[in-house]
View 1 (cartoon, rainbow, N blue to C red):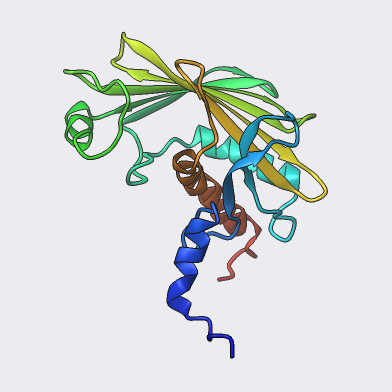
View 2: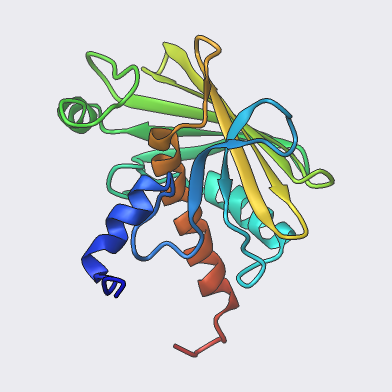
Length: 207
């Protein structure tokens, strides 16, 4: 007879299928999937999420996520945050300042790009978006206050029927990334977006 499925095998199966996410991820991402928009190219693609949000709701909440900058390491807020160069319906840039000493310490454990030797660490992200095509690209740089270095440019598209998200990035050398490591970072973003959507849809005063 077929062996009973053991719960302990579940994480392994999820991991080996190229899908990402913790047990709490509502919408799982898969890495290195053939792009729908760009034949022959690879991207990270989400599972369909119509039961949680429309394509437009996800798009709007992703934009809100970009403006509400938090540390990708522990979710903490930056020391200072500015939203500059905003063109409504088109683009904005976030400039976040982080405590330099904390970042220099954390850089021993985590990958933090272009941490300056002294002074605060500054991350800049220009977000250019188009609601008509549900496309977002974000251009990331980081470094010191005066010395910013390009890190990567990411492009995301929200698809309809079914609603799902497709994403890839290009690093400073122009290399395209749609791999498991990129998907793991993006999964945290997507999880956060759906948590925010859930909160926004909760009845006022309700649980």
